Image (tube, rainbow, N blue to C red; front, side):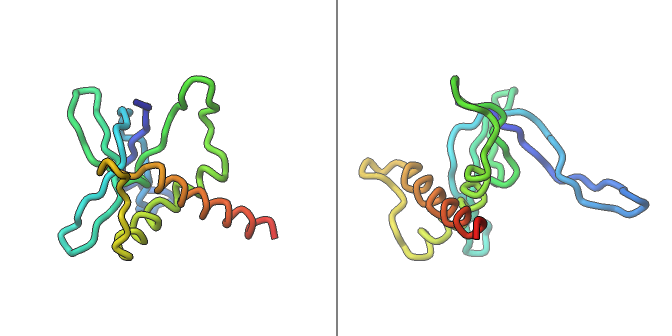
Length: 131
């Protein structure tokens, strides 16, 4: 399991005006990605994390950041990584809207397929950015 920083939104006053800021809430252990229904027929990609207390929580994917990589891996996300992370909600949403299976042959969550698609989008974004 990898360590993640979990963020929350907090109202702060900046230059005399209230502003909604994303601030660090806690550090947790990442277990896996999942989907959570919003009650309006939509589902949102979430990360399933374990807090220091042992409590399991779901957190919207844009509210976590991996804080360290596996041994031998640079923990700083590249621009490609950031683009792929930003693409995750779209990849999952597209798969659901097209009724495509995003599970592997064993019925497990298809993380490899989702990651592959997210990085394809990231690579396209990098090509467009270079133009």
